[in-house]
Amino acid sequence: MRLFSICTFLLFFSKSAFSTKCVSLEDVKMTVYSSGGVSYETSITGCIERVAFPNPVVEVYVKHQNIPRLGRDSVRNMKHLHTVTFDNCGVKVVAPGAFRNVPNLKSVRIVSGVLEEVPNGVFSALPKLGILKFHRNKIKTIERGAFAGISTLKQVFCDHNELREWDPRWFTNSTNLEIVDFQRNKIRSLPRRAFYDLPNVKEIYFEYNELETVQPEAFTTLQKLKYLGLRYNRLKSLDSKVFPTDMIIDTLTIDANYFNFLSRKVLAALVVKRLTVDGNPWKCLCLDRVLLWLHEMNATAVRSDNCVGGSVPVCSFASTFSTSCTEMVDNDVTRRYLDELRKVDPPLDKYCARLD
Image (tube, rainbow, N blue to C red; front, side, top):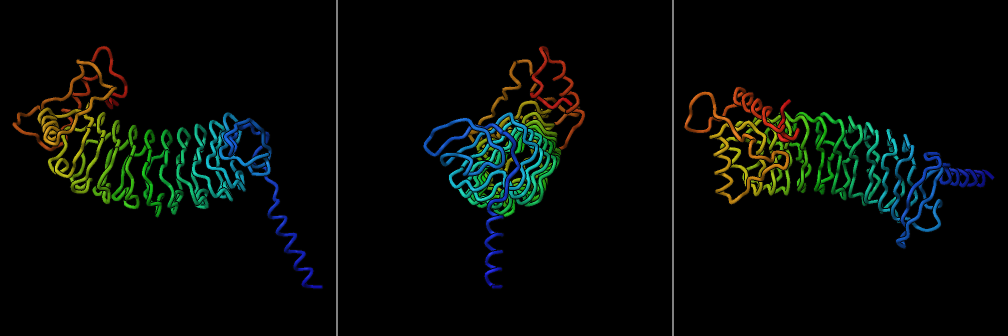
């Protein structure tokens, strides 16, 4: 009798756990794509789950809906689902467990919303996750380990947010990441070993931030990049140990910063194919040295689309006479150069140079 009671209890508990009612969504309209390639619109109250659709679904696209919170089990029990998108849905919170039993989910996009935090534990149970997109939100905090331990993760886009720091511990043991896009945030510094746990990264985007420093060894372990974007920041110089020796970068953008020079040691450590230099207060002799370095490598100085026009000054001479590039930040050169840019008529595109 006792054994029967225990079995009955376990059966009841199991059924209750499996059939937990989901209340994450209320009359939410979406477009779905079936495994047969047919798309249609439908509305969901409850969860995005297999029983809500007549046929297996591979993609779910939700746009312009009111979903302030993606709670536990918001997307669950979808064997065939590979892509889910929440676009302009006012998502402010994504709870751990929001995605459960979706073994083939490869792409999660929560974009153009008001998301403020990416907590730990949201994505770790997705065995095939390859792409995460959070652009155009209000993200100020990413918890340590939020993107950690995901061996399949290849691309993370977190541009157009409000982050003030970069923490490599976000990505611990996600060693196959190839693209990190954090442009248009408020990040002030890249720390030492910023990409130490990301040996396979190929494209790094940090344009339009507030970068003032890149710490020595920030790019250690990286030997080849297709793209490194540092344009439109507040960098005045780069430490000679920022890059590992003989690092190859196909495209490096450093325009619209406050560079007066690049040191000989930095130039000796790098091989580049394309470099943008516009909108920096270069000392003319130092710019000549950079251009000669590019010429000797058969590389190209690429003109920024934001600085077109023959009247844009490209460099300034130091106030004290010199016959070679002096590797010192000269605030007077910077001030005079930026003053000249402000006088250009018609006015420059606001992204040609950092005038503030």
